[in-house]
Image 1 (cartoon, rainbow, N blue to C red):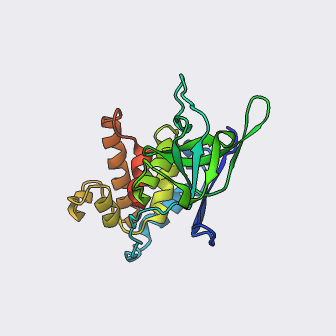
Image 2: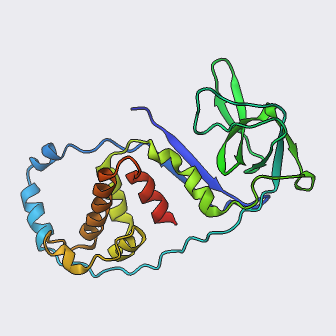
Image 3: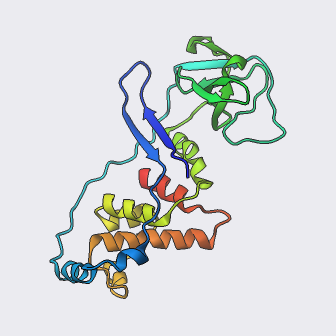
Length: 244
């Protein structure tokens, strides 16, 4: 497996970055069978079970704000580009289309023979790449007509997370990460659509720790998504709903 580092940075026009984060290739899942045979594991397991439960940590999580995006950069396409083989992250457009650009930055990608530069743009409700040589950048004041009347932060979130529908993942890594970062199972259950869950639902699985309850909620989402795998994708829903 090759190492992949995906860097995401959110910043306003001509301002400081608001936030940034990295997504890296996860480490391989540990061999639980070999780990369970290590000497002293039985004693550690007894110590963990006998340890007192920590009090629930109540954390006030930030609320996602759905706001209209104000684009400062636009471009007019110089040619028509329609593809026989559809590629999700490449935009299709007609000559003369006005496209909103997500900043002046360019994405560099290595092609078959040379490095190509792309803008990230929004056209007809889709975010994608368009070749820099096919676009003439114009000022906001020069825009005559625009198909994108309103594009919100919610639209942006849903679009940039679409690749998660096709990415594979190691469930144990996802489960561990969520269990470590989420301190209130009830908050997670509410945003995932399981507000009907109650403390009594955990009695049958003997989930006493908060992390165990969080894991139960995550696993329920996974099972529901797998039961309807044609329309629902676990990693995509977990990411979008948890942020928004």
